[in-house]
Image (tube, rainbow, N blue to C red; front, side):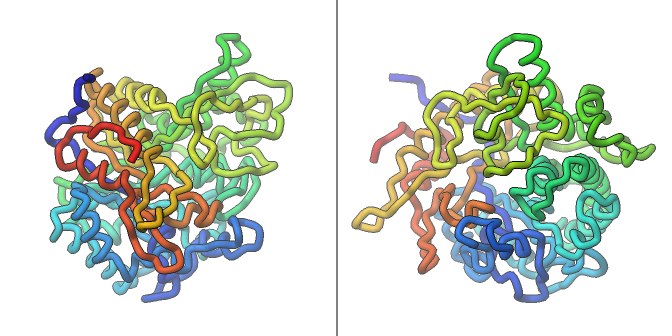
Amino acid sequence: MPEPVTFPPAFLWGAATSAYQIEGAVREDGRTPSIWDTFSHTPGKTAGGEHGDIAVDHYHRYRDDVALMAELGLGAYRFSVSWSRVQPTGRGPAIQRGLDFYRRLVDELLAHGIKPALTLYHWDLPQELEDAGGWPERDTALRFAEYAQIVGEALGDRVEQWITLNEPWCSAFLGYGSGVHAPGRTDAAASLKAAHHLNLAHGLGTSALRAAMPARNTVAVSLNSSVIRTVSQDPADLSAGQRIDDLANGVFHGPMLNGAYPETLFEATSSVTDWSYVLDGDLELIHQPLDALGLNYYTPALVSAAESTPTGPRADGHGASSYSPWPGADDVMFHQTPGERTEMGWTIDPTGLHELIMRYSRLAPGLPLYITENGAAYDDKPDPDGRVHDPERIAYLHGHLSAVRRAITDGADVRGYFLWSLMDNFEWAYGYGKRFGAVYVDYSTLARTPKSSAHWYAQAARTGELPPVTTE
């Protein structure tokens, strides 16, 4: 019998969602459109023209959803705030009705003994700010700092864990480079400008939060840093891997953790941009001390050098586009990694999560780490009795949580894990066709049914030990 996989007593067991994917109520209580409202209502941008107008109606069902979290024994819930629900134009005073929803949600979580972990930005920029130029414009970062202050002052007395940005890589390079995410622009130079101004927003937002909140609160950022592997140790392949690593990882963790962009990033992108928008003092503003670092992981990437990049699978796995999200890396080829895949077509490889954790333990020694997203999409369906069995997801979770435990044994300071996602929801450009949830949602009735993986995860959360993988 293998030894049971047990976790430290203080390990935080959570689940995660984001505002646009679950809330609905897009026109209620003063909320105005975000870029995802506009994008999802643009013909051809999302699967089946689906959108988040109702999503899973969490805005009206949050009490029942929190009760369900409590039944599942979750210790923490990571959610995001809709910027345009709080500050409809992205400027000026808050709409109190919008803030009141998050006050009610936080109070409900605390009443059930669940720790709220609040993400300020999960891709839903107010449309008015995009109309003014969006993330490629410096002013957007300044507006984000004001928004951070508003939310920090409103909820800082009750929420202790804060995250500035979720996956800024997706915001910059999928939103402004490949165009498969909102706002759907395809401009390589704009994507690099967006990356810098997202970094600046993180730094300014961190300072604004610290000024607005009690000192006990923690501030982090969630990065979807990629595990980049090369098909060989050939110098050309290693060079290709370095370029993608700079564009996937160094462009964010460089200034955030070290106060500098990689010089190799500047070299690789010199034909795209001159980086003149990086002003004196910006790197100091970005390089704010963090209290923790969030890591999101789904699958590794495998790259090589190539004379020209063919049409094929992309490392990010967020959809297909004739435009590359990798400025300055047109001669890099992506390969499908071997092994079993999820419904997204992403290879299942827990060793990548262990590798990622250990890398950031070395890059940022002493900085606590959280896995702020990890999970898998499968084609889940209820059986004739209405139960939803998802043994594949249980096996996925067991493998990845075991990788987290190995990293802790190897010296990594990993404090918690947030399953993506609490429930099935609007999966961005994929619409409602990809189910990541531990809780099944019937989209015709919006009824919630915990899958077998939810019960498995609940047992792990309650005992601190991974239950065996079952096929039932």
